[in-house]
Image: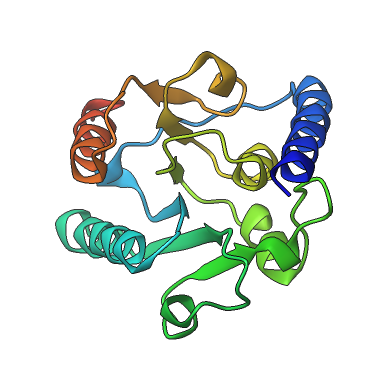
Amino acid sequence: MQFIDNIKIKAGRLVLKKEVKKNTNRNPVVCNLNNAYSVALLMNISDESDLRKITKFEKFLKAEFGIKKVFILGYSDNKKEDPDFLRSSISFDYLQRKDLSWNGVPSGTVYDNFVAERFDILIDMTNYFNVPLRFVLLRSQAKFKTGIFSEESTPYFDMMIAFDKDDFEEYANQLVHYLTIINAK
């Protein structure tokens, strides 16, 4: 089964590569967290611990910066349909395998609504190249997009943060630091 999954991922990456070449007319608008009205958070959510981390960060952004609209879009690659920990939360939306084409391209109402929204800042909290979330990043109408640095991620982000640890809280702190000093008025 791993072999087939690898083929699907490679096919998804090829489609992404073609779309990146077509997506050259983007004009980012730099936004500071202190001036943001809406922020979107992307994250791969594999268990309840991931869910707790991202909702804690959401609450922090609302409380600390007064951001009115913080929206979370998660991706769950669980083979089980609607894991209990996702089903019990109404504070965010998520994509699952059933929302993807065979090569990882997302579709459906959740996806369409998210990419149509013009968030001030879109933050990718995922620390690896996730094909479905890269489609979301690429097609999102967000004004400013940020995430973890990698050569492969350059076409997707307006600002990248070099971070090589697997420490969600430290990465969130780095994001907040840079997103409060960038374009400060």
